[in-house]
Length: 541
Picture (tube, rainbow, N blue to C red):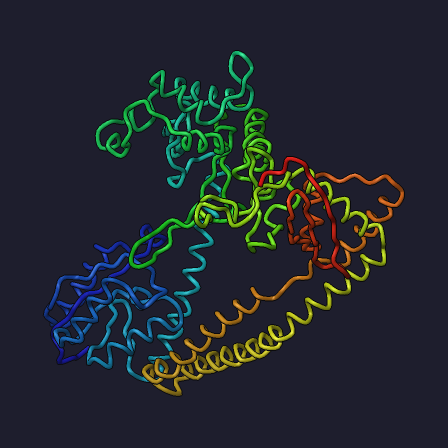
């Protein structure tokens, strides 16, 4: 190819999945240098070596190349082939068009694309094939990882685990238990799920203190050197957080997982992003802990997390019926739950809310009595099936009224989005037919892409704001059956089921107080408010 330009720059690129597919940066540079020599160009700058995905236009090394082009220091960019410049059906053409406006052309070592309709068609076909190859590569990679997992081959994605060491057996990498570390792992599970020599189950903090007191070395302590510097604490120190990580790890029960995270490029850096468990690849490994002991530990962890009698601090779905659902009429603040005295305490009674050393509101209300009285009042309402039917109709009507403007706008946005996508597809079809050059494609495609992006964001936001009815046909039938059981005197619900009913009807209470007398007015998805009155001696002021 004859060209008067002589100042050239080399651009090479690989992504993580392409490193082992004959796309190494060094080999690309070698081919590009040979091409520059044959064309008689002079190399104006060192090669730009990019390790970044080709599906985006903003890349660190490509930005440096843009700066050279804007400064007029290069006339031609040399790439190995089209998919090294960018992936997909649009990205490489947009980049070419961008450089063409700066007076810089892009040439490819392995293929010559003439500036003719036939050459543009050939380039479009090549971009389509490259996209197909990328998708097939991803499919083959996933299939290969799955086969390795079936062969019990521990992949590089599986990190080193305390209690195991990685050993090579032929072409396989396997986990093999380390006897002294395996004994520590087994003791951690036993102390937590079963108990010590006296049968007392230990907390995570107690297990960590016990291991630290006898100086059991962690993996970083054993590695020493630069690895030990990563650990700020003294050698032999264990944290409760590390104990939790071990207790949650299913590897010790005989199943390791690959693909738990995926590296995603953001702001020029690769960051791990957790993946859904359904996409993890299970790998069978030697078990250190019996499966039933591991499951017992999971049960205990979940119990400690959710059961308020064990851990009230993490009591988000509490057994306490009206948590975060009672509000003081006098000060307008919520009543929070105090696990020490099992009381609902008005936020206005806190010391931080005092004015001139005087509380602006009353103090505490006994949680068990309040919950029992509210549930009894609520059951009186549930006994009447007509009330349930009326509540259901009211909820449906309120939901439809709230969703009407949102759904109307959502229909418009969905229609606008479909129209913009159709316009973009038609534009790409016209470009592939060579009805206009790449720079026209860029000028017309960019506004469409921005419009599509805005409509997609608005659609997602609108969908998130659609209110779901709290009472559907299934829940109504369940409530009617429960109402029948109440009238027959044979009803029983767990505390969680009671709490679920309260949330379904969105029952909330306004608490009024006069001395030791109190009045609670309940409202929600019910035809009329419920009122209960009570008196408690010795109620804290």
